Image (cartoon, rainbow, N blue to C red):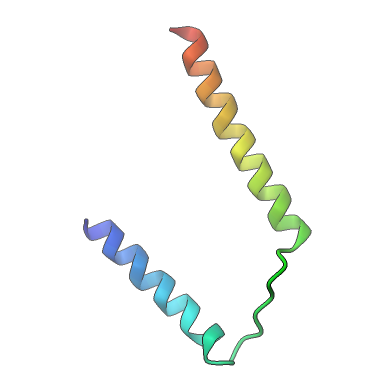
Length: 55
């Protein structure tokens, strides 16, 4: 529970300048972000598949 509270505080601290108009907010993610997300999902999926395969 403590980690969850710390994560929420971190999100709040990171998001406050964006909503205050200090930092520009972009709605569309950068292509690099999409590639990193897809790579991470692929790695997690491959790990889950590999784990189920070994059982």
